[in-house]
Image (cartoon, rainbow, N blue to C red):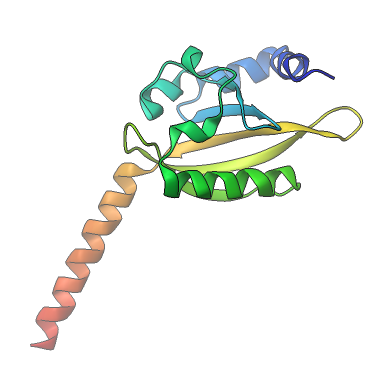
Length: 144
């Protein structure tokens, strides 16, 4: 089955359309080659690009070398049937996201793509880093 038909089949259910379009997290679907078939409107805020600019293009171009390697590792693991959770920074916006990938299978169980969700954790990570630094400074004061 052609990948575009699979995406449309997934999206034909109104509930699925609302889920993908109405959430504040990034939702995405890639084909087995890593090309973007669908991203919701949150993509623009996270990646700094309009979704239409990336349809049919590799998701890897959204990341610098280090983050791209992490993304490709997670993508490969997903193609093997895993559902990895991982963190990446978008290259152009420096938004840090926590991702979760899931394999997409056709009616016969064949792997046809990857879908997932990404949540912006930039502020949470900054808060954690500040708290850690504060706790470390308190520990140093107690040592004196």
